[in-house]
Length: 85
Image (cartoon, rainbow, N blue to C red; front, side):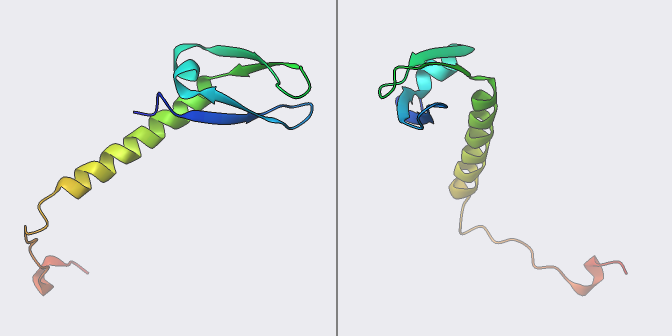
């Protein structure tokens, strides 16, 4: 779903934002790239990114499931006998 999107990664030396495809971060455990501004070599570990992406996908799945529920379906209104004090 997000494979064709890009994510900006800041260079640790100059702060320049470099765009990387999400697909590349999903496929490899480490990404090595060269900053477009200062030419510094940057190593990025993708494990934390993948974990966060999985959490976003799970939340999106929950939202889609909630949106797909029948809005006309009535839920039972709680009654006073339903509560224990």
